[in-house]
Image 1 (cartoon, rainbow, N blue to C red):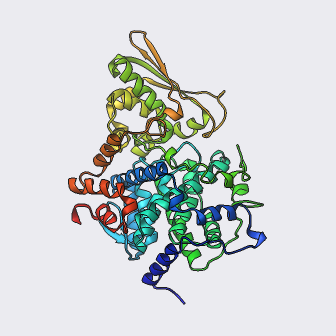
Image 2: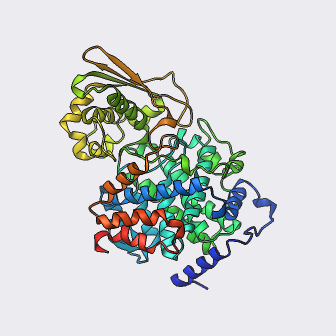
Image 3: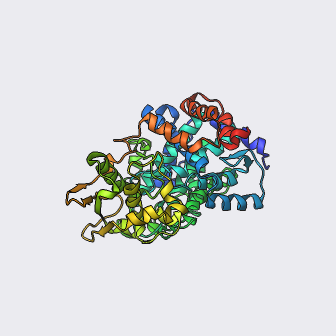
Length: 491
């Protein structure tokens, strides 16, 4: 018998209430592979198993994501996706962040998953698949739809992101093959978050993962186009679709991550390949949420080490653009493949994927804003100040530096002043500002959130969102939070 929306919500809440029972409900040896082990970890892991450090990190990422979504709510990509979703219809109780209306779960996942990425301020990590912005929009939308608690959201975000990252770490060949990790691995995190919130058994989760895999996609060559931002929206929508279909009884191959013609073999067989053998043992060992970076620059993350190096030298040595004769940045080939495609950026989308432009902006502006967005707009791409500074920047591709994103690499920047004085600096990944070892301060994170949300939200609403996220585990419902970020001053 088909369930109504209210009936489905009651069923989901009932499944959540049974979270103390053992969800293992099958002993079929044919489904006891990696996918089964992953699903068992998801079903058995509870909020009480989560370290306080990871819970706080998840709250920080949720606040970060809400700010990024509001900031990106009216970017071109979000406008197009919103129009597409509205033309397709579909009412429902899920807020579209920053847009002032509610829609279906699928549409909310698509739009919010796009807006959170649309200004390139999304949080992410060093490893293939470590993108929180394919998990958090889904967890918030599903919890809003089914009336679930803040504690359930935190549980889903931490577990979903950990599974997504560990599967990504197991298959770096996806990146080497030319696929974008956002859509390819994002579907795992979104599916897991939705399924966890819906109280899935191990078997249901295995089928949901398989249904999610059947929708995964994304290509690195989309970088620099507006389609790149929608990849995260597709990943969010695919996870919601997979979970809802599995909830309704749709089945899949229960071993679709591993084995012959499985996910890893099909998508990760090039470059560094894959290692399916050690994925399960790394789940929750340790949890990885606190390793995710909160971005302060609104451009591709691969720019950030070089940008930090230049910004730190400006701070340390007190020179300005007028003092500089030449800036030399050295990068490995895999970074050039992404950041070297638009030598003269004409749009904000292209500027976000151009290292010459990123360094020119730091040189021209000196100390960047928090967050730093203005150089990476259409106007910023054509700004004469930045164009003049680009003439001073030279990017050298070090073909002798092999390896990929998960391999150790350096991005040294050398500044030569007109006086002949020279400075060189390289920022290690672990010391990059915004990460676990060099995090944004609490005040920096709050400043970032306030700057991104003020205008759409009233000052009181800005502070209320900060308070609600800070107390998320105490909330029986996230309705108030979602109403504020959906309607803003109109609420």
